[in-house]
Length: 119
Image 1 (cartoon, one colour):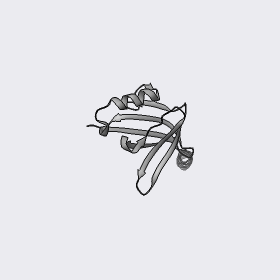
Image 2 (cartoon, helix red, strand yellow):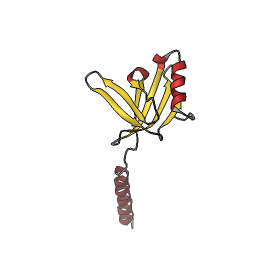
Image 3 (cartoon, one colour):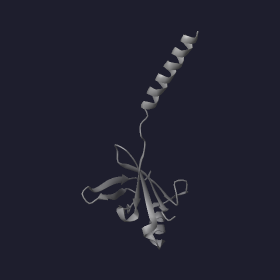
Image 4 (cartoon, helix red, strand yellow):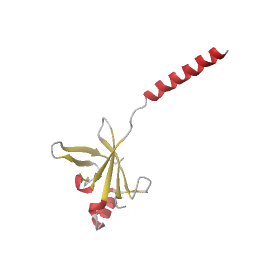
C-alpha cells in the first residue's frame, strides 16, 4: 500500500511539472526612461524604443486595444491624448519611467504605463 501511494505521489508530481512547462508568456514588459521612448501620436501607430546605440531601435505597434495608464499598473485607464498631456505637464520628465507591455511574437503593445521613478 505504501509503495502504491509513493508511485501515485511521484506520478502526480511528474505530471504537474509537465503542465507548468506548457505555459506561454503572454506579455513582456520593458522598463524605460522617457527619453528612450517615442510615444505614438495616434491610436493606431507605433511606439519606438531606443535600446542602445549599437542595437538601433525597436518599433512596436499600438492599436485601439492598447491600454494607457498614469501612475501605475493598477491606475485607471486613460486615453492616449490624456497620457501625452500629463507628460507635457510634468516638470521633472527625467524622473518618469515608461513601462511598455507587448505580446511576444506579435510585437503588439498591450499597455503603456507612465509612472514617477522618484524615490
